[in-house]
Image (tube, rainbow, N blue to C red; front, side, top):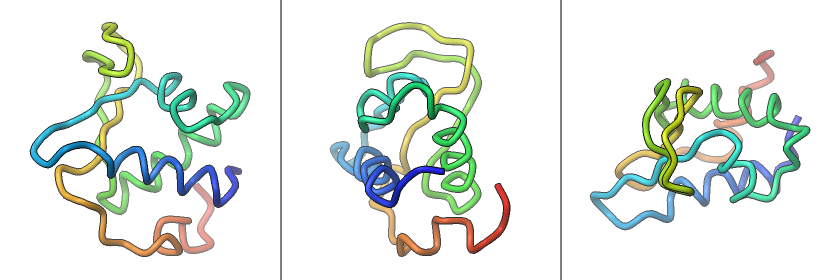
Length: 98
């Protein structure tokens, strides 16, 4: 499970792009951008699933990771085109198992 600080950094990365632009990340580069050890990629992936369920990010398989400019076939993640309005407690999964 990610710490609240790590979760906050993920949400901040998704919210800090200029309006009307999209910044895409592969899971590994998202982990690097938010300072999450690569050994915790499964926890990050679970948190991304929760964010996606709440409309706080979008995902697809394959595309270009803007963080390093490489093509990827695994999961590609990006934030919403407008700032997130949900409270952090709404994004923690509400006590449900992820």
